[in-house]
Every structure is written in structure tokens, then in C-alpha cells.
Length: 192
Image (cartoon, rainbow, N blue to C red):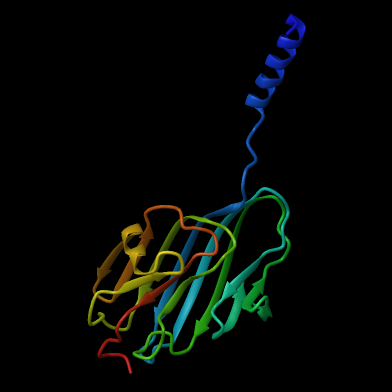
């Protein structure tokens, strides 16, 4: 190979090394708080901090039984889309955004319910997930969590604390995109 060709190949390789890698949009954090009433109904607030590499219009999957859905405090009407109950978010520009969503779930924590949905399949990975669930009384047994990807073995990836009637949970690693997470908690004697 001629010396000039070697130099050009070397320069091309160096240029490829200094090009930035494509950044990926994601959720820096999702904080969920839930207050469970004695009848098993629950008021849920989700605070998402998103970083978007480009302007996007997002949809957030919600539990199908979600009522009184609010985005930033304003009442919104979710729609059925692709077999899911979703809340359409307004188009967001590239950058960091904080989004707050709240809703009510009737009968979410009872003997017959499938559990309290804490993550519902958001499109992006979640770097830091945390939740605080306040029950009307201490649960009869330790709460368990079920993941869409990992089943009950998600417990290895969560730090869980039970302090009386309050459950605190935090992820120990990034949760995958479209992850679902359900809290299963046996109803307390204070719940119907």
C-alpha cells in the first residue's frame, strides 16, 4: 500500500474513533407513590424524568382500570392503542423533561386483585426506579414483586424496606424497556 493511502486509512480510523456514539433516549428516573385506602382503592402518582435525544410524541401505558387520569394536574382521557390503555403525552422537544401523571385504581389491593401495577410497560429503560406505597395498616406478610421480564426473581434487583404500613422499593439496576412491575400484597385486617 502506498504511504499516502496508509495515511488516509489511518486518518479515517482516527475520525471514526472520535465520533460520538449515538445517545439513546430513556427514563433517568421513575418515582411512583401510591396511597391505598381501606377498600383497596389506590391513588397513584408517577413522576418521570426523561431525556430525549430528539423531539418525540410519547404514549404511556396505564392499567386498564385507571380512572381520573391527570397529566401535570390536568384531567386527561386515555385511549386504547395497540391493545393497550395509553395516555398520549404532548410532543416533547429533545432534552430533559419531568412528567407527572396521577390516577385512581379501584380495588387494586384486595384478596382478589392481581396486585398494584407500579410500572406498566413504558417504551424506555428506566435507570432509577423507586416507589413508596402507603397501606391503611401493616400488611399480613412481606410484599412481593412480579416483573414482566423476570417474574418473581425481580426481588434480586430491588431493595425493599417495610416500615409499618409503608413499603419503600428502589431498583438496584436499570430496568429494561417495556418492563412491568406489580406489587403483590396480602390485604391487611384494616382492609375490606
